[in-house]
Image (cartoon, rainbow, N blue to C red; front, top):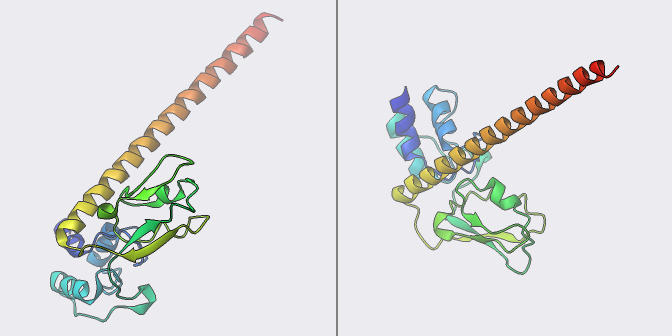
Length: 190
């Protein structure tokens, strides 16, 4: 099963756009591998991608399901520097860390890292992000690099979450000790 998931994931475009209804390409690959999802929901992969998925899965080729998007030219995000307020909402949702900038400062898109997922457009409170034609062709090498950046970001996010949870647990233990000590001292001082 793992080999099939890997093979399916390998032919997906790795935009991590979630247009298919799943939380990234790997989740969609897993759903296809267990026959929980059809092979025709990946708009970024288009008909060429569906043909590859049909080959890998042994399923018949289908037309792209329009409910999940339409085939379009590869695009990338661009931030209008005159409008950006540095809120970092785009940074939080970018699956590949393609958006950089300090809080309350101008942000920018690393065009070579952008997968064109457009996840950054919706949370922007000032509508300063637009999708523009990509200055490159999306290749399997770009897809693999994007997947690696996506996995690295997920690992960093997970490590950050674990550290926050550890810190909160330690804080809670310290508060419990202080409360216990206060209760003991209150009994002693009666």
